[in-house]
Image (cartoon, rainbow, N blue to C red; front, side, top):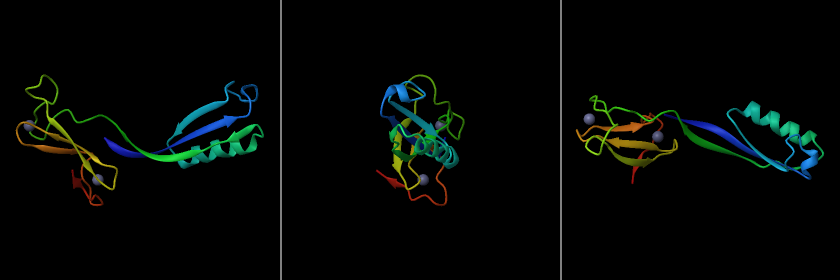
Length: 119
Ligand SMILES: [Zn+2]
Ligand SMILES: [Zn+2]
């Protein structure tokens, strides 16, 4: 998995009749500043748009690891399921999977800019 920056924008119209979607509020999620800018410009240009608050978020995308580094599968019954933990970090945090064999796998991997705090 990896942390990705995304933007959530909510666009409100004065009346549903005036909105292209036919509703007064729509929410969109975009992956790039360019897409966000495009939506904001369109909202600004529309006299019926009354508000378009947006916020930046960091979201974990991708699939969780399926095997520990020794090759044990995480799938299956409780006998093979790893203990799950979470490390707080400036990058957003890491999912931690502790295999029964003792392997501790952080996902996303801890990078040079990380300041992991085990909680
Ligand atoms: Zn293992
Ligand atoms: Zn980190």
